Length: 99
Image (cartoon, rainbow, N blue to C red):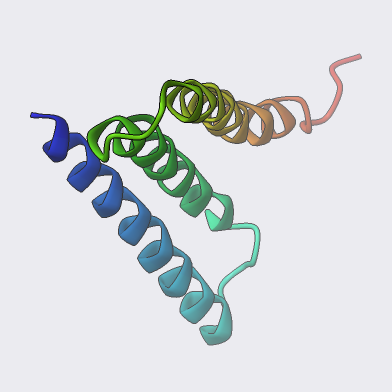
């Protein structure tokens, strides 16, 4: 089960890189650069968090390394959540003011 979490993290990282390449190709074709470009960061950060959270323990790293990796994994998870929330908040507040 533990290695499956690491494998899922690797798949999320690959998905993030693949989506970024796809978005860049769409921009080269003439699409708007603001159209979904930031989405690649979420799977990338979540995949790195999953890998960083499980791999040190599975590889038999010392306790201090495992705890440091767990802390960094939490930071990546919070950053990934902010990546989703901040652009949505900007779009919601960018409309014309009612007044």
